[in-house]
Length: 558
Image 1: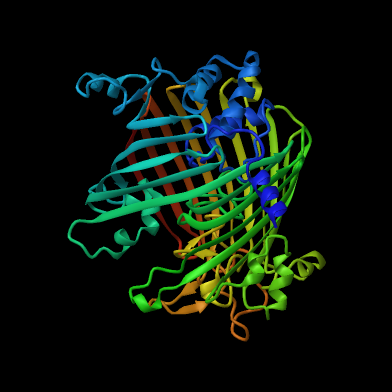
Image 2 (image 1 turned 90 degrees about the horizontal axis):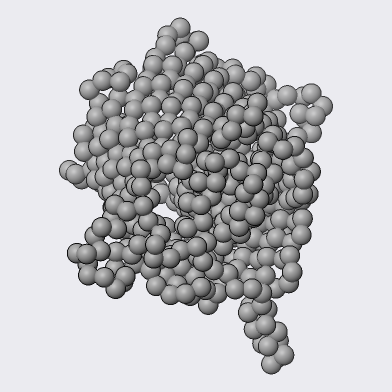
C-alpha cells in the first residue's frame, strides 16, 4: 500500500513547473493571432479543442518569437503586446500596473488607469503560485435602423474575476458580474448573445431589467513523461468542439456555458478528449416543468505535423438520470446507447484539417445524427438520413496581402438533424442549438475578410447566404406539415412523411452582411463597433423583410 501511495505522489508531482495552468477565455483576441500564425505554419495550433492554458499560449508566443523574422510589422507589434500579457518573465514595472499592492500611494497610482501598461486590480505571488484579480466592465449602446428606427438599447454590467495557479499544477478561474438594461430590450441578444440564455433577462419580472453571469473551474495539469500532457478540469466554462469558421457542427459555443468535467490527453500525435457536461432544457414558466439534461462527448484525433489532422467525435444527449456508461471515457458511446434500450440522442462526426500548405488551410466535417449513414450511402434518402456536412478554407495573406485573412465555407444540414423523438433530448441547451446556428433543413455560404491594421485595430466584413425550409403552421400556431426544419419538433412515426426532401416547407432565403471594427487605444480598453444588415426573402409567401442595427461596446478589464 505504501508503494502505491509513493507512486501516486510521484505521478502527481511529476513534470515541469507550469507558470499559468488556467485557461485563456474563448473570445480573447490572442486566439485570432494564434490561428493566423498556425495557417502561416509558424506554429501548430489545435483549434478544434481551443481552450488553452495560459502557459500553452506563452509557449506558442515564444515559438513565434523565435521565428519573428518571418513576421510582418503588424504581426511583430501584436506579438510584443501579447508577450507582456501571457509570458510572466516579460512582465515588469515598466509595462505592468497594479491598482492595489504596487507600494505607491493610491492617489499617486491613479495615473496607471490610462497608461499603456497591462493592468490588474491586484496581483501577487510568483511562478507556479499566484493570484490575479481583475475588475470587469462593459457598456453597450445599440440602435435599430430597420424596421423600427426608434428602438434603442443600453446595457451596462460590471463584476470581478480571479485567476491563478497553485502548487505549480492547479489552475483556477472564477468570475461573476451583474448588469442592467435600459430602453427597449430588442437588441440585447444581438449585442450580447448570452442574453438569449440569461434567466433573469428572459423571466423579465422585475421593473428594472437585469442580468447576471458567473463561471468558475479548477484545472489540474501534469506531464508525467516527455511529450505526454494530461489535464483534468471541473467547473463551468465556455467551450467549443470541432472545426468551423462561421459556426461549428459539433459544438458551436452559441449556447450557455456548460458545467463540465473534462479529460484532455496529448501524447505525441494523439489527442484525446472526454467530456461529461450538464445544462438545462427550454425556459419554461412553470418551475416544475424545468429539467436538467446531460451531454457526454469524446474525441480522438491524430495530428500529423505538416500534413493533416483527422478526428472522430461521438456524443450522447440524455436526461432524467446519470448514466454510468456515458461516464466511461474510453467506451464507444453510440454502441453503448443501443445496449441501454436506444432511449438517447447519439451522434458522431468525422472531420479533418490540412496542414501541408503554407497560408492555406482546408477543413471539413461530416456529422451523422443517430448513427444513420448506411441508407444515405445507398441512395435511400428519407427521414432517417440525418446528415450534415461542412467544407471550408482559410487563406492568410492571399496574393501576398500582409495581415489579411479570407474565409469561405459551405454548410449543409439535412432535415431532422439535431432533433429527437423526445424533445428533452434534442441537441440544445436552454433551447439553443448546441451545433451549427442555422439548424436543420438549411444550408449556408459563409465568407469573411479580416485585416489587422495594427496592434490597436482590426477590421472585418462577413457575408452569408442562408436557405432554410421551415415547418408549416396555420394562423393558430398548429403544425400543419413537419419537414424537419424545427429543432423542437422531431419526426413523428405514422404522421410525418418518410421522405424528407431538403429545403421542403416554407422556404426563406436570407442575405446578411456585417461590418466590424475593433479599436484598442490603450491596453485593457477595447471598443467594438458593429453594423449588421439582413434581408429575409420568404419565397413561399412572396414577401421580404429587412433588419439592420448597429452598436458599440466598450470593454474595460483591469
